[in-house]
Structures are given as C-alpha cells and as structure tokens.
Length: 77
Image (cartoon, rainbow, N blue to C red; front, side):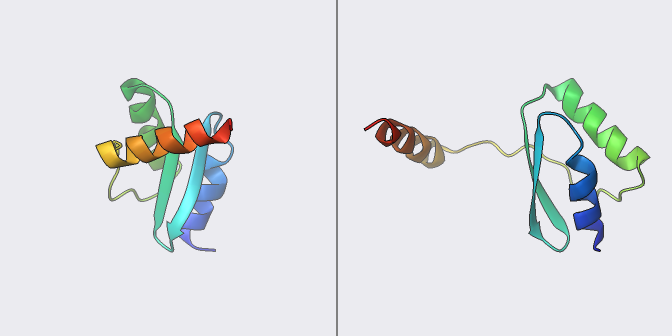
C-alpha cells in the first residue's frame, strides 16, 4: 500500500472530510473547515507520521463556479 493510500484510509476516519486519490503520491481533500481547522488537520497528518510536502487551498475559478451553478440549476428540471 502506498503512503498516499495509507493517508487516504487514515483521513477516511476524519469527520467532514473526503480524500480522493489523484495519483500514487497525491491526495485531494474536500474539507469545509476554517483556517484553524486546516492547520490542526495538517498537524495531525504530520503527527501521524505522514510526510506532507505540499498543503494548499485550491479556490474555485470563475469558470468552475459558473459550471457548478449551471449543473445545479439543471438538476431540478
């Protein structure tokens, strides 16, 4: 089992968090916490022995926001 898969399994026990494996070394998280919650999550990951080389928030761009809103509008029809 790769470290990313191990981290994905470990993160699966965190409430309000979804971890998706992007590739053998990368996870993408869906997390709705505050900045303090993100910092605490990072500290727990490192404390659990996972090597974290990058941890960043990805914001939605205008196109992604538009496509999400259009998809949501079409869901009710």
